[in-house]
Length: 345
Image 1 (cartoon, rainbow, N blue to C red):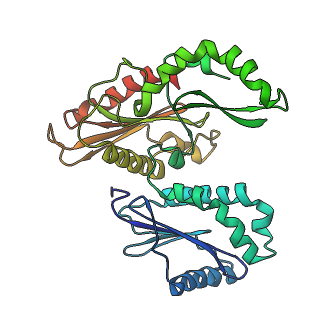
Image 2 (image 1 turned 180 degrees about the horizontal axis):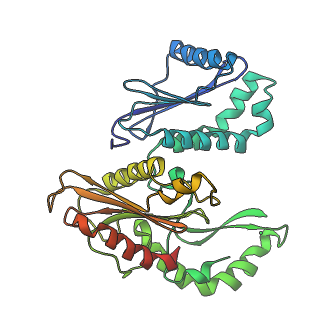
């Protein structure tokens, strides 16, 4: 399993489908924005391959060379070691969603003026560049909402203006509401009346930070990171700092868990629950795995980190474990942890 984000370069290319005119090209290297751009000859070659297939009524969705993976709708190229097509496909989905959000689907599907569209798309560059960088969260990959578990979460469970109000330093309230009350009345009516009693529970959320779990929540000391997904609610809990500082670094743990997620989602578990299949597919459904594990390094005690995935019903748990964790106890540890986390998500 290759490590993502280890100095590879990602290029994102957007072309007008009818003419092949480049609308924009964004690049990142090692998770940071880069000025390096694709040569025009490469852009022309990529568009030529795409148009050639289109003329033959063949859809080329992806291609892989010795050092580059290409996924074509928008076109993205990556030289990262071990990059998965799943990650690139979801990157393209987010980029297209950003373009629709800021420009509009009608403007993208019926291009009237290419130069005007190029100018309008500049508004999406900042958001698109954030997709190309390294994220501390994982919702971009899992397509679930990243969550934290506060000590008194039930009190915070709260439809269409989007408003942002500062509750505490480093903590803002974003809410959707209807046409009333007017903005001038929000502070006295909303903040002072309804949120003032909740400021102490909210202060307790601030120290959670990257841990995402309440202080004192019982987790096995071998757990270096975890990812819990609720496949129906599309929510996820992700932390690589559950029990303080240990090796490997948080960046390495995050990379390992992201890679493991793409591996198990692409090869072992379906991406989301579906209706039960009938007839021939019943045999296939019965053979879907419920758990798998991976050891990086040797299986000798005390060497190589362990990764284990377990799916029970609508929840899927991925754990990154220390080298001291015995392989014969991985499933038991994952099952116990999943049962402990189930009431939270």
